[in-house]
Image 1 (cartoon, helix red, strand yellow):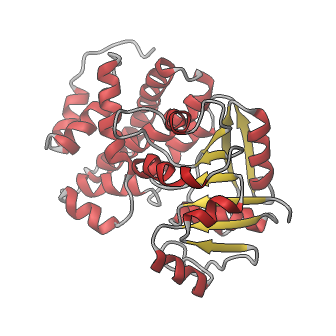
Image 2 (cartoon, helix red, strand yellow):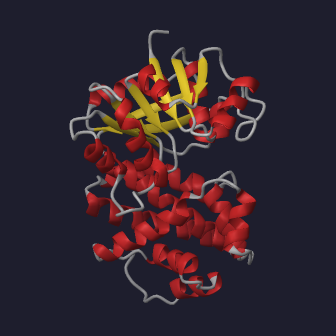
Length: 332
């Protein structure tokens, strides 16, 4: 119990990772910005809103005090939505010590300029600050109830990735380490866009053939962008690439897929978001990915059509027709 970790973000994923770390014998503090929500967690000893009927382990504490969170441990794991990532770090910085280590399980780009999240850490703290990203095919509920799961932890500092793996690895949760932070970040961000596209296709009534083709060609789009940004191609064939893509495109636990399903069934975008009532990272990621593709002149037709459905009012069925009408070409 001499290991400590503070997890910032008391949604489903942050709570699941806090439960996991505590279950593995780590002193764990879970921070959330909403004091009323945190008070309810403390009283109920469970997160009734996001992970009901899953009790907190004994060594899991909660707080809404950011100074307390920063003082608890020099290892911080950020689990807020990507659009809130930079703001959370700005708020956190005055309370951090020189030896701070920052990891995150947030998936997405910086909405301000499309930069990757490790670039925000380097900008706000230091390029020498130990940083790591945790990503892979994971649904929070399955982790919280201890179903077998495997993820990737990527860092340019092998000692840090091993430290974080040591806290999370064990029982039914398996961790793999990597040095390719860029590849893991890109895979985690763009797969949400493709999950919306897969949901749209299924909502329109297309079959398994369509879904398989979309996943496969979508993976090509992730690889094109990821390699251009500096990622390694083999990363996209692993847990944080293909694994996460398959998960979010095929299972209705995925909020992004459910959002796409609603659009394919003809529901209004606003209504669909209200019904899901949780963060849908693929909406902002579609815009950021589309702009990056334009900036680097990268062909990403599925991303482009998804962007047009979300931001230009293109009818989903017309988007599919646009993809089918593209010229015949070699696969690779």
